[in-house]
Image (tube, rainbow, N blue to C red; front, top):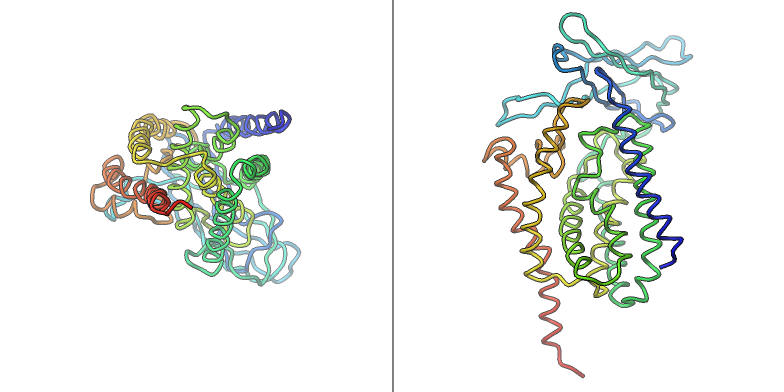
Length: 391
């Protein structure tokens, strides 16, 4: 691969990691409140879910309420809208344990046009913190909030499946000649999408140390997949490719089924960036296998299962450590902090085994099944090829 491409991709990765460090430092304020939706410059529907996050320094009273106000701009006779937001809570079998910093507030606006939204969080004793004013436009368009298994969700899954299949088939037919042409385009698309999303998400007010660091399985795959593809053949490349295949594919498939996009449904930028990144993770992982660069065996399954369990230990403590910095909530990397608010099979594990870390027992059981499913197609394909008569 051209040296210039490698330098470019290395620079993009460095920018992503540097931006994450800068974003983390810039959010180190004792009290904070942000509005992440609606988006500036993107029309929202008249019925929308205003969303954001809020925190106050440890030692202060807990946030008691969050008031959200939307005021019309130059629309005589149209009244301002006021409502109260609800904080998300981590629960144990229906019993609230502790609040997360994320809040949302359904709202219906009185007219199309320009609006300004602000939010204020109040704690006992009169302590308060307010967000910056956010100006947006409202129009009679469908609601933007994401709805699971809506037409847009199903369409995104179908398009992703078609792209994944096309790339995997092309890699299987073209082998190394295809990979040499494909890798630079793939790497630039993957990392370009990620760096654009990182800066967009911070500017939108949604970036958080608890959810946005590149410590998710998919985040690690995004950073490492292009690098692995550019490596020369070696045992290290093979072992790293195995881990990325299982982490990336397993995490990305679940993400496509249970997208974590909240209020940012179709056709917002976050919606497109989310599905593009997870589609490319699976496509890249499959291309390694179908091109012959990676061989998934039963040994791969065992090595990956062991590596994942070892890696989960420091991630668990990182999740806990993040509660000591704004927004003063545990991280949720590898889903070790709490069940995803949008709902997933983790809710079932929490009901059966209890809150984190006990529901990790469910992960261990599910991991055997999920990783086995990711291994099985390639095992069956090799078995079928071995039975095929040689001509």
